[in-house]
Each structure stands twice: as C-alpha cells, then as structure tokens.
Amino acid sequence: MINKQNILEQIFQQENITDVTELNSQMLSASGIKEFFKSVDEFYVWKEWFRKGELDVGAREFGDFQTPPNLAERVCRMLNGKGINPTTVIEPTYGKGNFIHASLNHFKNINKVYGIEIQKHYEMHFKKSMLQTKAIEILHGQDITLEIHHDDFFKHEFPEYLLGDTEELLMLGNPPWITVAELSRLSSANMPEKSNFKNYSGMDAITGKSNFDLSEYIIIQLLELLDKAKKGTLALLCKNSIAKNVVNSLPDKNWNTTTVELYNFDAKKEFNVATDASLFLVRVGEEGKVKVNTCDVYNLDDPNNKLRTYGWVKDKFVSDVEKYKDSSTVDNVSPLIWRSGVKHDSSKIMELKVNEDNTLENGLKEYVDIEDTLVYNLLKSSDLKKETVPNKTRKKVIITQQKVGQDTTYIKDNFPKMWGYLVKYRKFLDKRKSSIYKGKPDFSIFGIGDYSFAPYKVAIAGMYKKSNFSLVMPINNKPVMLDDTCYFLSFSKYLDAVFTLLILNSELVQKFLKSLVFVDTQRPYTKDTLMRIDILEAVKELSLGDLLAYAKDFDIYIPLGVSEDDYADYIERLSTSPETFFQGKVDSANLQETNK
Image (cartoon, rainbow, N blue to C red; front, side, top):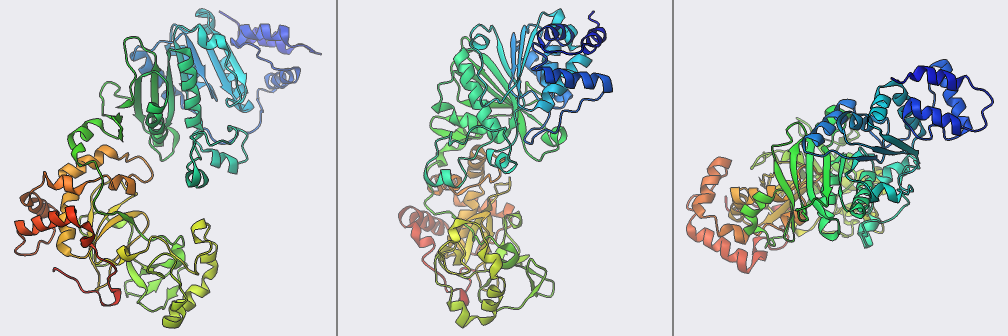
C-alpha cells in the first residue's frame, strides 16, 4: 500500500525548487494525477498548505451547483445497472470531483479519467481530495491514468487519442446551471464567446431567445465530440428544459443518437433550487439500433419504470407520444383566435387592490380616488383555478386605451382624477424598460383591442400546470380583463362561450393538451400551443349530450331549452363564419349581459 504521508513529507521538505518535473513524478505516486504541479509557484502554495493544514485558493465564480457525493454515487450505480461500464470517463466541468470519485468506485473497466475545470479553487480542492482518500489505491490497483486540466471548456481542445481509440467512452458530470446573460451580469469569464449559436434571426435574436444556458452549449459540444468518436455515452445533470431543447434539435443534427433518456430527481432536495432537473442520458452509435428523436422519461430511483416518452412524432414535437397518438385528430389550426391579456409593466400603479370596503389601493399602499369608467375588474393566472370564476375579483386594472397606439390625451378632458393620478406617477410609467413603449402615447398599454371588451371570455392560465379552462363573465355589466399571463377567446353570446368551454375541457382536448405541453417550463401554455386546438375537429367526436354531461361536472349554467339545433348552429357558424362569435367592440359603458 502506498504511504502517501511519507511521500508528501519528502516532497514538501525540499527547498529551492526550480523545476517540478521530478516532483510531479513523485506526486503521481501520491495522487494518481499527471503533472500535479503546473508551476514552481504552485508547488510553494501546496507546501504552505501542507505546513499549515489549510488550503487557501481564493473564491469560486458563480454558475455551478456542486454535485452531492450521494447523488453522484446514485447516478453511477444506475448507469452501471444499465450496462454502461466505460473504459474512459471525461468530466468536462469536474468541480470538487465528486463524479470522478464515484466513477472510480463503480466502473471497473476504467483505464483513463480526463477532467477539465476552469476554477483554480476546485482544481486544488480536487487534488487535495485525491491525496486524502483511497482513490489513489483504486487508480494504482486498476492501472488508471488520471489527467486533469485547469482550463476553459469553451477553449479546450480535446486530444485525438482520447476519442479515437476508446473502447467505451462516458462523458459524465454536472455543467453550470446558468445562462450566458446571467454570467455576463456577474462579469464571469466562464462562458463561451458571444454568439447566436442557435442561429436565431431578427427579433428573436434581439429579444433574448439567443440567450442560452451554459449547460445546453456544453451538451451540444460534447454530443458533437461523441458523434466524432462514433460511439459513447453522455450522462449529464441538467434542467429538464435544457434536455427538452436538445431533443427538440435532434432532427436537425447528424448525431447517431440510439438511446435518449431522462432520469428525474429532486433538485430542491439535492441543490436547493426550485427547478425540474434530471440526469440526461444519450447513447451514440449502439450496434443494432437506429437513430431516435424521442426521449424516454424515468425516475432516477426507479430507473426501470418508464413514465412517458416525449419528442418527435413525424413533424410534431410533443410532451407525451402515446397521449398524442390518441388525440392527434384535433391537432390543426384553431378557427378562433387566442389572445393574451393586457400588458402594462407597472403593477404598482396600474393594478389596484380592492379593499373590503370597496376602496382602491395601489401597490404603494396608497388610497386611490379616480373615476370608475376606465377601471376594470382583473383576473390573473392564479385566479383561474376553476371552470367558473367568482363575480368579484381581488384586483382591478386601469385601462387607458381601447386599442394599441390610441391617443391618451382624452383622459385629461374626460377623466381629470384619472389624469392627475397618472401624471402623479408618471415616473413609474416612463421608466418601463420594454422597447414596445418607446414612441407611444403617454401611459400606453399593450394586449388591448376590441376583443378585450367582449362580455364573455374562455380563459386559461399560461403560467400554471393545470390545463383547465375558465368561463369569465361580466361584473356589474362591465367586461373583466385578464393580465398578460393569461390567454382567452372572446364571445358576444353566452351559449357560444359555454359550448367552447365544455369542448376545451373535454377529455379529448385535455388529453391533446397534455400531450403537447411541458408543465415544467416557465409558461406551459402559449398562444402557439392553443392555436393548434382545432375545435371543429373536436366537435366531430363530441355530441351535445357529452357537453351537457360535462356541464354537470363543472357546475356550468345551461340556459333552459338548449337544443341540438343550438349546437348545430354553433358548429355551422364555427365552420363558415367564426368572426360572428365576437363582432367588434362592445360599448363597455352600457354593456348588457346577453343570453342569461
């Protein structure tokens, strides 16, 4: 057995060192690491640590979550159970080295470990851990070469021998969970050169779609290397949204991805972060297998029980392949136009709390006395929990325009209290950062139009996981507004809204939505997704009796005497003249509830 303490004592007793070549040869025996000392100065840092018993290497940069040893062990144990037993392990951002230690414990065929780490803090921490654990005995017992590099992954050049002659290659680790934009704000050097690597164009590139997580960039670069090697496995911890993005890109890549899998774990428990995360496993070039563009989902602690499969079904990207196959008949184009709610970007001023005595209070905790005409009840995503919403709202909102770009000076003449209020808080409104307000009239809002003033709306919360739709009714003969986290359809007639609500909440449409939506994204339900619901196709499979049965479950009021003729008329107008469902602006000052 190697006596590391004796070797270290001999090394650190030496003085006047000018060359570390011989020392590195001795340190290879003590640590298993090639070229342990990168310079003479580094030798003296380590000598001081050995003397004091403390290793002071400075602070780390931001952008990483160090993998708990137990999680690293569970990952390697699961991979081993899946028959993955690599000869070479590459750890692209090894940090404290917990994945390297776990690899040495679980993979018995390893002959090389190759690690990269940009932060000196972690490089030295890892070297110290190798000196203090039994890892060196494993290295020598299995004749393993450990080669680590203090380098920037984004500039590192992997040697040809690493990829070319490897019998079984595993790229394992936990790359940084942070975006390029966030790192830029932290003035970090740990990021690639700025580039629009997804090739977004126009406004998408300008407004931030070209921003990306470092882990996504690293995964793509490693898959390129794996494809070059012709065979191997990638197993990296990442946010589920990153894995989804990679799977989404598979048809456009030449990678021979023969297995793609996701193993969920509790990121809150492991890293204390509120995000959905998994081990992302991709195998390239397995013999006897063809390329796949789908991903099977499991739990890390139950790796043999498949939960679902997501990915590509022909030219459609879906979150659940089986559910999609059962409901894809409604996947087309909606005959009705989905809208998003009002956008003002100044909730402290534009949104008003309704107190118990019906007085109004702004976000500055100040009492507000203004004319009621331009003040509307407001629903947010958190209010759309049931199929019907109460006839009272927690908040109200100031609506300064009836269409985007409308001149707002009319407020000064017609509503002097409102004008005074807006002028008083102009500084809040003028400092709104979005470019959409530039060059627009004072106190402008967006997401406003004739459709906003419809008496009836069928709405869904864009930010929540539930896919239920809600019926929004007028309150005190005024239409109710929704905020920009919601999407809705507009209706002039109550019965049209009810039929549509029941169709959208039917089992068929709900299964279709669940097959499309990734509920772990920030905004699961978007206009693009909702516009894929072809209500006309859905009604082919839903009778009036089906809808009336749903109505009982949802406690929806159905007017007396509703008949097959009413349903037939609804379907006829939906197929020939969907514009009749909402015809122009309703006079909001004299709105009367119809069909009740």
